[in-house]
Length: 259
Image (cartoon, rainbow, N blue to C red; front, side, top):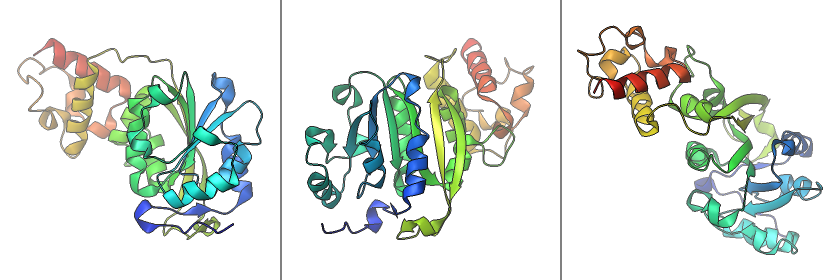
């Protein structure tokens, strides 16, 4: 079978180490009330081989690369409609999957943030994600308040998911090797159905705070808050990177009450 050519414009770096592939699949925890698993960007199927051997999983694969899709059609002829040639970022989860879903993948690094925001948009269905990211992105996802890596993505993900940095992966186990280190993280959906505030405003507050992260929130949020009515809020005298998710919820509640 002709091998698939890695394409730079798709951010493809194919994992070649079967032990690491098994370690990634082993990081899934279907006891979190799901059996459907979607693998994103399977390439030549190093994760898929292991996934499809696991009893109890209903596995679907999605790849935007037609060459990968045609390769996988020959490799897994029984998959049928569960092998999808499409853009994950444009996928309609509700129309494709009935019920909770786990997502796994060696994700293309050039769209990793977009993948995570797609997960957030579908947080009512996506109960777990295990994936390979650029190490820097993985660290941002798992970063805690007060660290220099902590940012917009950290807050948004941690509002709805428990984020765990699982392990680091060296460049030599990929073909072609990326110029950066990689890391695997796990997102597990928490019990928060909705934040205790105006969620749209919450997103605006977080973005505004980090877009001017060197300023205190009082100044960074000057276009959003009523400064005269919120003079006594000490959180506004901090920079965004110091605030936890709960702190941002509190600020959002006060912005709403003092408009």
